[in-house]
Structure formats: structure tokens, C-alpha cells
Image (cartoon, rainbow over all chains, first blue to last red; front, side, top):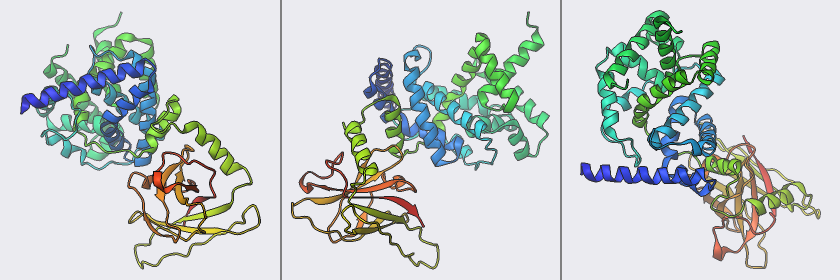
Length: 191
Length: 228
């Protein structure tokens, strides 16, 4: 079963890579295919970070226009297609939050999704080995550090918001993040 | 020459930018550094790549169809329906010329929590030839149902088809209407399009080939959505 799902995953990945290449050649049908394969996933990301459906849809629209413009620069030897796309989506959503000065708190349910490492129903998933390793490394950190990193990355929180939410001085939050990130880098062993 | 402390600071800054923690001037400065310092930019990218598997843990969610339509319009793609161009013409003709046969008024009725009393709805506008034809339509977002009034029956076997035209100007069919009016369920994918300032239109179409990707004729009625 595991083998079958990993075969399906690499097939999906190949499909997605070829769709991005088609888009890079200027064929909008390629972009449409990328959209069909990934829009639910990327919308989930935009929705979580923007915390507003309409804004998330506007951001998602920009994401696919960016994908269209940048498709030619996608290099599948350097990044998996879904993490390339997910990063574009996340960055666009963060840009929107910073530009809108939206500092209102977002519900904490992001945490629930992380604790549960059961495979999700989405057809295009990152190779879950990488995800498990990241989660294991995060779990190895003191909870203050890993919690701050997760909230920043998945909810788009700023230092200020993290400090306010945890009732902790800004300097302490900064040191959680900095120490946590250093340890994370060591744990992941990516240079 | 970059000393060790400075290098460490830069590493922290790259991590902070990748996490999205920075705001205001700090963020602007870090973004500028990305452009001017490729090593810094690679460091930021490295962090994004390392953390990106976390994004897989977020639940997927379906966006409304307006997103693709807008993307397609912006990249110059033709969406599935080979209809963008004729529709532009159709829309310009329909909405700008004075030849529009009648005005269709649609109110989105937001049902108050309690009491469940419906608000009245009505509007009228004269047709080009002086004959008033008014159709009241209400929409209840709670159950996704449209209530439409009755229409004159033309003699040519065609039936009215209702279209929603959101801000992107592309009509989407909401389905064929009964001449005698009544309740019309709205496809869940279309519901988000029923928003203030979207336009509703009715064209007369052949029921045998419904639903249609695009209207075949000028609308006989149009109207803006108002929320009351």
C-alpha cells in the first residue's frame, strides 16, 4: 500500500512537472492543468494565512499569474514542483498580510493539523519522508521554540504578534526563534 | 570582509524573512538585501525549501470558479468555453446600448436570523419600446435558492436562461428558467458569484442544448444585484 501510494505520488509529480513545462512554453492549457492539480492545496495555504476567503481568492489569482510568469525558471532538479508552488503561494499570502497590516489574531487550529501526521487526502503530497523528518526535528525542539516557528510559518504571525499572544517579551520570542532555527538547521543537516 | 557576528546576524535575518516574521522597514531592508546579495537570497530560499513540507499539513480547500476565470483573463488564456471574445461583444452590446428590452431586478435576500420574515422585493424599468416588463428575483444564500417571477412566453420554442455576470464580465449559466417562475436551485460553485454588483441577465435559448457555455443572443433582461 505504501509502495502504491508512493508510485502514485511520483506519477503526480511527473504530471505536475510536465504541466509546468507546458505553461513555460507559453501554452495556457499547461497553466490550467497546474491549476486543476494544485488549486485546492494552494488555496488552503492562502486561506490559512489570509484568514479571509475573498482575500485568499485574490491572492490565489496572483499566485497563478506569478506561476505563469515564472514557469520557465522552475527547475525540477532543485525543488519539488509542489513545494515550489506552495512557497509562491505562501509568500504571496504573507505579502498580502504585511501590506494590509492585518494583525488580527488567527485561530489556533493550525496546530491541530500539524500534530496529526496521518496522510492527508490530497493527491499531490510532498514525499512524506521529508515532512516526517521536519516534524520530528520540530518536535525535538523546546515547545516554545517549535510553537513560535510553526505560528510564524503557518499563520503568518510577526514577532510582535507572537509576543502579544504568548505574553512574552519581544526579546525572548526573538531568541526562541533564532535558537530554534539554528537547531532546526543542524537537525535537518542541510548545511 | 564579513565578520562572524555579522554573518550570524545575516543568517538569522534570512531565517526571519523566510518565516515571514519581519514587518515594515526591517522587512523592506531584508527584501532589498535579497536583490543585492545572491548568497543571502539563497539562504532565504534554503529556509523556504526546508520548511515547505509543513505547508502540506494545511487542509486543502476549493476556491470558487471566479479565481480561474480571472487568471485566464490575465494570462490571455481561453478558458474551456471558447467564449471570451463573443461574450465581450455580447456584454458591451447588452449592457451599454439602449436596446436592452427590460430591466431585471435581483435582490439578494439575507434572511434575518429571527424573525424569519422575508423582505419585499420589487423594481421596475421601462423597456425600449415603452412596454414595461419587470421580473423580480430573490436569492436566499441560506439555502442557495433563487425565487423568480413569471415571464412572457415567446412563440418560438425558446426558453429563458438565467446568467450571472461577475466583475470579470464572463457570463455563467445558472440554468434554464420555467416561464411560470418558481424556485431555482443554484449550483454551489456558482453561489459565491451572486454578490453585490454582479449582473444578472436573461437570454432566450434552445432548451434542447442546455445548459450552454455561453449565451447565443443578446439578453432580453438585465439587472444588477442589490443586497437588502
